[in-house]
Length: 250
Image (cartoon, rainbow, N blue to C red; front, side):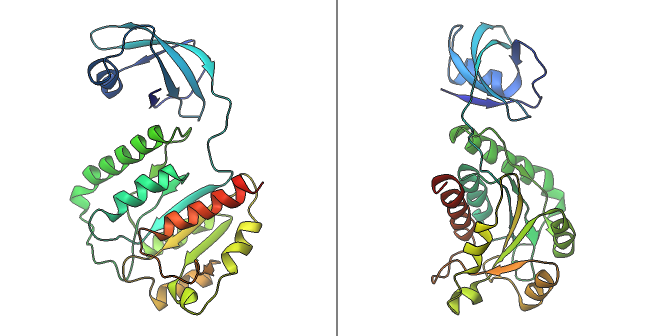
């Protein structure tokens, strides 16, 4: 059954009207008819099954049938902070990270980022990233559509980090030295509803200067096992480990 995120919170209504891209997809692409059912997800993460009542020239009129009761979200809110990588690697991180339960994505300009952020193209880039996240959230039947922030400076990243309960930085040098316990210890301290920020470097990794500043701002340095992971692989490893520990082991 198709799932659609809408930009409004549920406020007691019994009917929901879908417009724009949702109308086009339902009426023109999927060619649905009155009587067909879809999932609708409100901004406050309430999801329902709705039946199509009528299709006009520009509206899909639906009636709420029942609410989705199963929780689909990770017990903790995880923000993935990625040092801007080359090519379309960030798109992969957003797509697969959304499928694995990331709450938010925060790109940042790292010392070793090769990509130069073009502010003139910011809106176009953000729109594309948000679309990728929305489609991945629909495909994976999420109840939350991840937010994606415009890339920030490293200094801004440190300032933003003060809003989080748990702060982690993935550091390949720890992995090379065989450190493997810190991440597991962090996972053991996670409680439902906690906020978690995990920082990953770009292709060249996190610089020594950045590591020192992260440590001084309360970040725990963690290796992710004995193998060195690519910048696009490490966030997926972290999200998978969090899901395993908090969802499958409890």
